[in-house]
Structure formats: structure tokens, C-alpha cells
Image 1 (cartoon, rainbow over the protein chains, first blue to last red):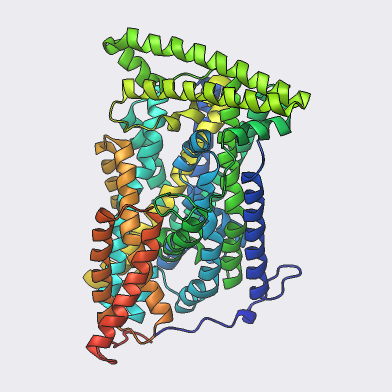
Image 2: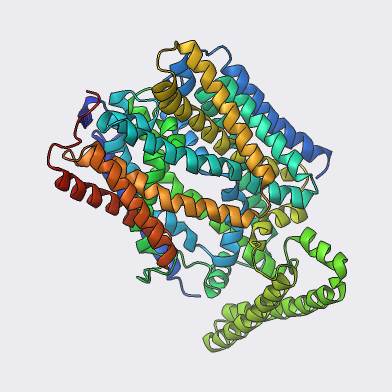
Length: 47
Length: 566
């Protein structure tokens, strides 16, 4: 038995501007990419 | 530490513990005790998940890691946002829909009892040993520095955490973690601000970045594909994703935290809070270490930070040798400081040719300093088993922070240790009660009986962890042993859950045998393959999934697929 997860839209995210969970996950992933990008820039900072 | 520090330390630690017991008094229902009252807000869940993961070692040792190796360790957290998104989208809705108390209940319902017990046993083995280390690791450092008795430090902190965890259960863990993490943030930010103020006034931000970059302390991301390098972008994104999936998705100490949310939304947002803030938080702690490195370029540090150990060796007949090392170090440090000032002067003058030459000279002077530091380490620890970097941050705290703030910072370390340990004890007690006692040993008792049993099991695990910590002698070896055990067992545990979630065709017998085969494979590879331990998380999980598929194919499509619950 692998229960199917409840449909994502059953419960509103309550996050302004991000109405679906898919949007929340994409936003979080986008922030992660930004963080890695900033860290890469920092790593390449000339001494 | 003076009286003010002790008042701040004891007031903070005991105040939070007593408040947690008072807030959760009279909660005597088994479900509430194990899962919480089910009204936790996403912010509380987020802090609780964060506090459970961040042990005292995070705040005591990580700045030392930043001091010695720079920002590269942050890459181990690259897998975390990815893992938490997968857990929020796939794992969490299933746990909530089944209304499980432990993650291993899912294995019992999806596969069979033997698979559930295998999962729970792996958790108890791994987390049971880990709970001893959670208290032991900070206690050994703090008792060494402050001259406290190690056994008394372990006993006192262990008994405090047992008291409030047993008293209030999961809710007490949530309530206390909220305040403990507030103390942690307050203390770390205070240390950061004071450290910034203590840097030389002439050192501008571009100078600081240039110096740190020049000493390779800002190399946060390494795209090397060499599997022997422990922390790279690839091991972080691929290997650590599996490590984080296993830890956050299948370790009861974490699952218990986020299934206590008032709704699926609260639990999910609590996880997303960590997905967003964990990398910046670790970056901040490592940056503190880099700042310490810069600070100690201009202020002479001890040649060996664990001064208690240093003095002990001096008293044991090495006094002349150690004094010579100290005076060599003082000369080398002064020379390095002069070279750095020349480098900065050339930078400010805009003379790139002189700057390049001064940089090379400063690097050579730094190498001389580091070589004397290595010599000092070998003089007191010929086998190289002790991590002197663990003492970098606490040395700065004691030497440069004002009284009161010192007490606050020591409270940070204890808060971190207690918050992680409380979640571990709560989870160990829950898994023992729900997965073994109620499911195998005594199946027909009432809630009051299981509630009492759960409290006794929590006490038992607390005492086991204290005994383990009291009998430990070599911290570094033990921490390494726990990491080894984690790297060996976590991947297969994750394999059990991944197979359960995604491969409907695999039944209980196939996954049980597949897990055993994968476990043997991981152990064999661990001792024969010299690669970063992060990769074993990927290898072990994939091995478990593939072997279970092969075994299921060999058994036949319907063999062992009896599902025990609907």
C-alpha cells in the first residue's frame, strides 16, 4: 500500500504571491540557486 | 567565567527547562505525548527542525572549521533544500495521511513487520549511540577549558534534558527548542558583532575580503569531480541530498518534529523554512570562523588553542621544548603581521606589482606560522587524534568577550546540546514504545500503560546515553565512529522508504532481503573504497532499491507482496 498524497491544492499555501505548493517549491529552489550563485561569486573573488 | 556568567548560563538553561515542564504540565495522553498536541505553527516546527539538527558541535566546532579550512564545508548543505522539497512533497503527506507516530510504522503498513522492525532497529542503533555523543562532545571541550569535572558536566546536562523530555514529551521538546534556538541566535550574533568590532580599524571590508580570499578561506564552492575530495559541489548536491533525505525523511528524531504540525501546511512551511535558511545559517557560522582567522592574523593567538592540554604537557617535562615552539611562533606571527601590513599598504597604494610581491611574502610567512603550529600539535598529540580547531572559538570567547556574554555563549553550546538531545530521546522513547513494545511485546494494553512505558523508555535511553558518554575517552574517535555508522546505515534506511514510496511492485520479503544485501555491500565498500563518505549515501540507497527489484523479479511478481494494512 502506497497511499497517494493528498492533492497539493487541498490546502492553501497561505504564502503571499505563491498560491500553489509547486510555486512554493520552485521559489525555494530558486533561492537555493541564487545562494549557490552568490557563493560561486565569492569563491572567485580576486585576492 | 565569573558569577555573572554563571547566573546567565544557569538562568538560561534551567529557566528554559523549567518553563518547558510548566507549559506542558498535565498532558497525559499517549498521542499528545509522542506527537505533540497537533497545534504547532510552521515557525515553531521550523525552529524545532533546525534545533534538532544543530547540535553543540555545530556552534563550537564549525567556527574552528571556518578558521582552518574556510567556507568549503557549506557545500554539505547544498543537498538540503532539494531533500526538504522532496520530503515536503512526497514523504510528509504520506506520513500525515497514515497518521503515524513513527516513520517505521509506514514500513510496517507498506511492507511487513520484519521490515518495520529492521527500520526501527537501524534507527535505535544509530541514534542511541549518537545521543551519547550529543552530550559528550561539547562536555569534553567545555570541561577541559573551564576545569569542570567531565562526569559532573555530562550528568548535570543529561539529567536536565531527561527531566523535561520525560515530563512534557514532544510538546516540551518543541516549546524548549523555540527558546533555546533564540538563545543560540542571540549569542552567535553577539559574538559576530563583537568580533567585527575587534578587527583593526584600518581593515576595510574590501581588505578583509582580499585577505581572506588570498588565504583561500572564501573558496565556498569547489567544482572538482575528484571523489576523494570530501566537500565539493557534486558531493554536496548528489551525495548530501541522499544524506539529508535519509536524515530528515526517515530519522524519527526529525520526523517527530515536523509531523507535529497543526496541518500539512504548517509542517510543509516548517520544512521550507529550513530549506531557505539553513545554507545562510551555516555560511554565517563558517564566516565567523573566517573572521576569527583574520582577527588572529593581527592578534597573536596561542600556538596551540587547547591551552589546558598544552600546559599539561609542559608540566610533564616538555617545558623547554614547548617554550621554544612558543617563542618561534611569536617571532613568526610578528613577521607575518608585518608582511600582511605591507601587503595591505601596497593594495591601498594601488601598486599591483608590489601587491603581488607582498602577497607572496605574506603567504610564505603564513606557511611558516602554520608549520610551527603543526609542530606544536605534534608535540602534544603525536598521533594527531585531537582537533585543536574545536578550541578556537571558545578561546576567543574567553579571551576577548565581556563577562555576561561569555555566560551567554556557553549557554548557546548547552542549549544546542540539550535541544538536539531532547529530540533524540523523545524519538528513541517513541520508536521503542510504538515499534517494539506496543507492536511486538505487549499489544493489548491501554493508553495509560503505553504512556508510562514511553516515559520509562525515554528515561532508559537517557541513562544509556549518559553512561555511554561517561565511559567515552577519545572524543574524536567516537565522533568519527558515529559518522561512520551514519554513513553505513542511513543509505539503506533511505532505500527502504524510497522503494516503499515509488516502487509498488516490490514486496516485504524482497525489500527486506534487498536491504540486507545492500547493507553488506555498503559495509564492504566502506572498508575497501577510499571516497568521500557522502557518496555512500547515494550508493547505498541505489543498491537497496536495485537489489530489492532484482530479488522481487527472482521471487516472482506476487511473492512477498502481502500488505499488512490498508
